[in-house]
Image (cartoon, rainbow, N blue to C red; front, side, top):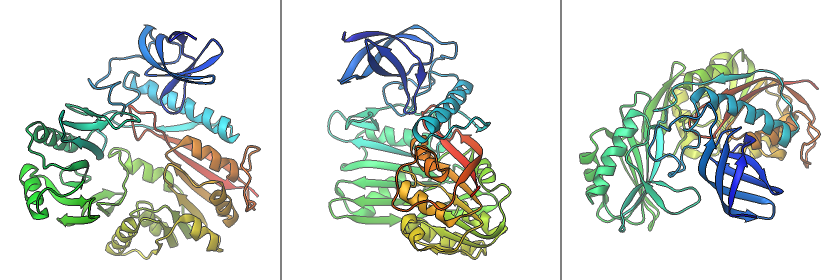
Length: 435
């Protein structure tokens, strides 16, 4: 097989690559569009699977546009800046349908309700890597690499984060950042005004109080700072230890090690879609985080139980519930452990698991609870397909030690474009028990 390929792109796949075939091989190539003709160079070859690098687009699709960011195609953080924004959403819906059917045997022919907002300046949280050895670099890791791409700007960041990145980049280039920094995680509040930083050091280069003073002088907007000395596994905190987000009429304390939704424009719409029409006696919120769904549920249900394995998030949830005057039963444990013990049937279940999803065994245990309705929010169509195969009793469901006692049908599918310019897809699936 030649090292250079002439390809006709058939479709996009989840993960960002386009699919093509050449000489009996399946070829994956990034930064393309369906219908395009391209030249590509073989990057890796394993049996009949080839990953290629795009060299030239010889016949472009109508939806191809000039990327906003000068680093697009190099830093690897974005995958779709070459695609018109409306077309990104259409392609993601196609990818979602195909993934659910192919991996889960779950054909969905109904409407996919699309929720979109601003295509740029949406992120309220970001992670940046730093290398202070020459050549000095502050920016993002290359995909699947330890190399850092130093960048000038990142258009998906909120204005507050963009300003912070620029300040830190100036310090890096002036050799004014303290040595020993490995990574900086930054997040802002819902007003995009207050800033919190998590900064990991290989080891502190000076006393923590001096490092804190340096960062507060350099970043006037810094409200809370958490430093980690990895050599001693020691944390140092300056400030309140959290920022506050407003959503759905509630205030949510979000600590340094807790999670909150990253797209600042779609938070309210997501909350409304997940909880629409939900009311009753007992609601169960799995992977509850800081209580983003728990607190609103407490307005519509007599009793709400939340479950999350992250201790920081669980503490935030309890503070948030108390501040709102809400009575919530909160469990700091893994959903799997909770479901092994829970016997009572909820009226409604909300779950927002991490990328791995539930897993087949946990999905089976969830089905055994027999809740009349489930709202499943997923950040990975592949693991969602596997879990839906169990919940809907698809022919492609994986074998489980615990047999699901109930079967569900899908009533609604929503696609939230929380990460424009990337291949990531956030999906809300509403399910109803049928047996």
